[in-house]
Structures are given as structure tokens and as C-alpha cells.
Figure 1 (cartoon, rainbow, N blue to C red):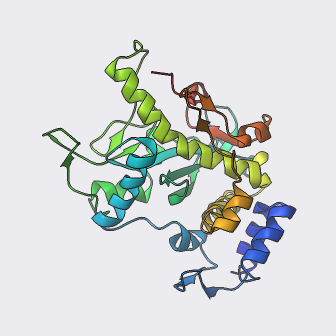
Figure 2 (tube, rainbow, N blue to C red):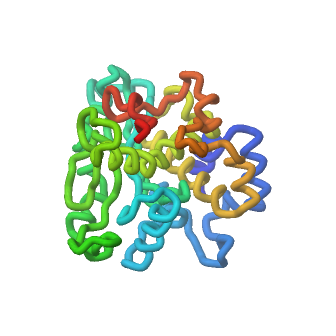
Length: 309
């Protein structure tokens, strides 16, 4: 990586985690071309951090690859036909010079938008960052390459299939919250409040459990990479590099068992007890209101924990 990406790495990591990463990677993070732990070649193009993403957050391209992700959601979160959980956050920045209202969001602050898709094991499989904060929720998603490739059917999604004990084929979907539009391959919860035990409430509960993964990933990132705890006094393109670097490091630290236990020790993520009650992850205690990742729409924080069924 060149000096620019090296600066992004230094800004992304705090001292303790930085030493862990440097030791784990054997001083190889500053080298442009190296071998990853599986022996495959990867390249960090110094001109664009998104090329680094291609090494550690790779979108599946075949039906079998997507079905492996679906298997994780089906077995771990009891939500079949799910290919990923998607969400976005506003990353706060200081007002860029001569930017006018281009980066002002509904919070009346300045931001760029981070949009991410994660699998059932809390890993990024797609990351997009850099869209101006003023753009509407739906507009942010429609501006991503993910949306465009889904529309062009270039991602190799599995064909519609029947759920267990059902006879009607249903499409495979991404799960999202109410900020996203309902489409053939995008599933969101039912709007409104529903009676306990109703089909709508049970469905919303299951969908929220699956979608909560991406919220936990954002929370872990902002708790560990302290650069995300306050508005960045940097130009938007540098902010994009830093956020993409955080995503790269997140996936790297989740790859091996040893680094995973250091980066996300037991209790880091939200869990459920035997009664189905949500036990907040330790990352929520670390926030203390200082995180600079804000939800895409007002009131989104109110639905972090699904209602019990």
C-alpha cells in the first residue's frame, strides 16, 4: 500500500489493536502484493481503497457460494432464503470546504454514507462508502454497484425455490429495515404494531434477528476503530479510504480463530438467553453516545431489538 493507505490504516486502528494487527500480518500490511493466509495472491491498489475490498470482502458470483451464506442464516438465525443483511450508516465528517449543502443529512450534520452487506458470521461481503449524506435512503442504495448488479442479475443469485413443506417457489432475498424499499430480492419487516403471536409479529421477529447482524458489525467497528467515534476533519475521499480500511481490517481479524477471539471476544455481539430475551453485546457499553455512525433515517434506533413473539 502507498503512503495514503498507510495513513488510513494508522488512523483506523487504536494502539493496542494496531499492535495485534501488525503482529498478525507480520509487517505485511504495508506491502502492495502479498499472499493471504490461504496462499492466494491479493493486491492492494494504492490509487483506490475499493480494490483492497476485493481481497477481503468479495461478493459471491455463483449460486453455490450464495447458498453457503444462506445455510448460515438458515441454521444460525432460523431465516431461510436469506443471502445477507444490509444496512447503511452516516459517517460524520467536518464540513468539507466549499461543499455547501452537498453533505448535510437529516441530522443537520455533515456525512458520507457507508452501505454494507454482511453474512451470517458477521463478515462483510460488500462495502460501499462515499455517497453524500444529503441523498435519500433509497437513493443511496440505488447508487451502489450492488443494486445495479442485482437489477442486471449479474450476481448469480439462486433461482426461486420452495421453503420447507411449501409448494410455491420464493426468491432468495437480502434482509433490511424499513429504510429500504420492498423488492423481489429485498425483504423488510411489516409496518406497524402487530398482536402477540400473529404471523406478522413472528415474521418481524425472525427478520430482525437476522438483520441485527449488520448492526452488530457496525457497532464493533465503531467501538474498536476509534476514528469512527467522532466527526473526521478530513476530505470525503480520505474518509472513504479510512472507512474502507476499517472494513478490510474487520474481515481480516475475523478470519482466524486467534485474532477473532482478540477482536471480538465472547459477549461482544448481541445474544439471546434461553427465554428469547436479547442480551446486548459489550460494544453497546463502549458507545457512550460518542459513535459517529448514525442510522439512515430518524427513529431507526427504536427498532434495534425485535419485540418478543
